Image (cartoon, rainbow, N blue to C red; front, side):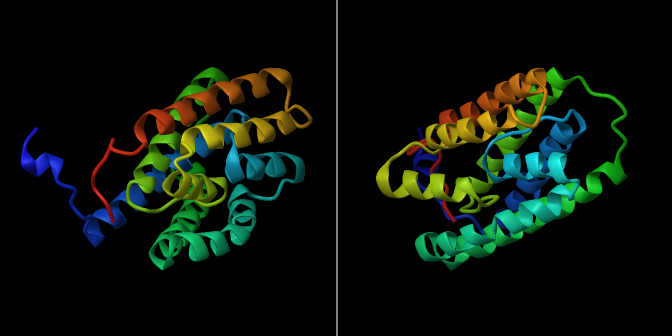
Length: 205
C-alpha cells in the first residue's frame, strides 16, 4: 500500500455536497421503488412508508416531520456540520421522493426485484452519506453515534431497530409484502455492516 492511499485525507466541501446529492438520490429512488411495490423498510423511512399506506399522507411530509426530534441528537452529539448536512439530506430525500414519480413512470415492478434493488440503493445511499459525515436522519443518526463513540456496529444496531419496525408491518401489509420487505432490509443492512466500519475507509469530513 502506498503512503498516499494509507494517509487519511479530508473531503472538500464540493466532495461532501456531491456525496450528499448522490446519496440522497439513491435513497430516494429506493424508497420510490418500495412505495410502487407497497413495501417498507426500517428506520424512520419505513415508519413513514407505513404511515403513508395507512393515512394517505405523502411520504415526504411524514419523513421530514418524523425526523425533527432527531436533529437535536445530531446537533448535541455529532456537531453542527453533521446536523446541517443531515437536515439537508432529509430535505432532499423528502423532495426527491415527491418528484421522482413525476420524472419517470414505473408502470409495473415485481416486489422481489423492488426489495433487492431498493434495499441496495438505500444502503449505498446511506453509506455514501455516512462517509461524508451526513445521514438521512432518524435511527441512522443514533446508529452512527453509537458506532463512533461506543464501537457498536451501525449496521447491526440498525438491523435490530428495523426488526421492530418491520414487525409492525404485519399489521399494515399483506404477508408476502412484509417478507419481501424483510429481504430488502437484510440487503440494506448488510451493505452498511460490511462496508461502514472502522478502518474500511480513511477519508473524513
